[in-house]
Structures are given as C-alpha cells and as structure tokens.
Length: 252
Ligand code: PEP
Image (cartoon, rainbow, N blue to C red):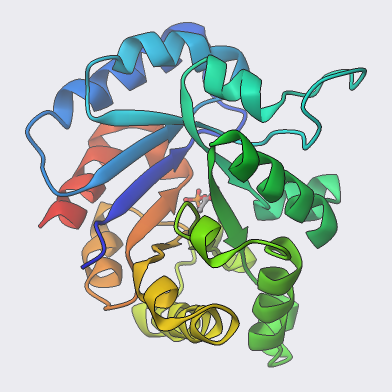
C-alpha cells in the first residue's frame, strides 16, 4: 500500500511574510491528519523561513529546482547539499515550466536527479505531454522518452527514493484538469514502464502524483484511482483552505 503524498509547488509566488503565514497555517491545520505525506516547496529565498515555520510538524520542505554540480563557480545556482543544509527533504525536478520555459532537457534533468540522489535529497520527477502531443496521440511516447531520459542510470534501489509526478502540461494552471480516467491511464503506463525497466517491486513501491489544476472539488475522484498516489499542486497550494482539504481527501 503506497502512502499518499501531497506536495505544494508555490512557484514564484508570495512574499516572505505570506510564505511564513501560509506555512504556519498548513502546519497547524494538518496536525492530527494521519496517513499522508505533505511537502511544501516555496521559492528558495524563503526556504529558511518556511523551514522554521513548519518545524516540529509533519510537513516537510522541498525545493523547486537545483543544480547538478556540488559547488563552484555557478552564479545563481544552488546545490543539493545547500538545499539539505537549509532543511529540504525533497526537490522538484523536470517541472514542465523548467522544461518548456527555461529549456531544460531530459539530460539536464537526469544530471540533477543523479546529483540529488547522491546527496540524499528525494527527487519528485515530473513528466507530462503538451496539448499538441496528446492530440497527435503521442502521449505514451513522450512520457516514455521523458522517463528514460530523466532517469538514465538510476538504480532500482535509488528508484525507491523517487516520486514521479504526471503533469499534463495542458492542465497546469489552466483550470483544465485531466479526467481521472485520462490520468489513471498514464499512471498505469508509468507503472508498467517501471516494471519493464526495473522490476515489479519498484513498480509497486514508487508513488506517482498527478498534477494539473487539482483542487478540493476534483481531488477525491483523482485520488480514488488505484495508481494515483497523491498530487503535486500549484495554484491551490497557495491557500491553506484549498490545500488542506486536498490533504484531507488523500488521508481518507
Ligand atoms: C504545478 O505547478 O505543478 C501544477 C500542477 O500547477 P496547478 O496546480 O496550478 O495546475
């Protein structure tokens, strides 16, 4: 049985005071909710402050990105060790906004995944197709290429540290959610891919989050699908009264 996992991706939103206030609210409102893992991924300049706000709660902290090099002359970048040092447990890698806005390739994502794993930071690795790719019937191929490219060289043992996130790009921040059936189909494909590339133990153990316009009104039916193990949430993670009900739905 995979434990549900809800992560909030705050992207480039909030200021220091509102980040602290939101983290404090989420930490207090999730007290006593059992059977679900919760992560908050604030902008990196607020990691330290958010870490203090959630200290002692069941909420863990993640970063939205990192660089693959351990240290050195890489202006503006952050290493896995730095993120761990400031209290991160996990890091989102390969988010579609980084793939499509910033131009990160599967190779870039792969280097980051390997560096995060080597440092002991748990990656949430995102995959997902564009609308044109879905309409062209190439969703399966896109997901397979992203999976193989982003996870090249990852051992079966390392896979247990990874969470996958299926995020159809056309559903991110658009209000258009994939139907539970559309999401489940891709989640099942990902599980079969893990079985094929690794083994059935890995395929059954790795959690796969769905991301794309998740909110309280659609979370329960998505989470009811057997291969949807949680959610990666953007917009609705910016308000405790939208985010916490999704956590509750996952715990039920
Ligand atoms: C995301 O950023 O990963 C995401 C799924 O955003 P939203 O929930 O706003 O669609």
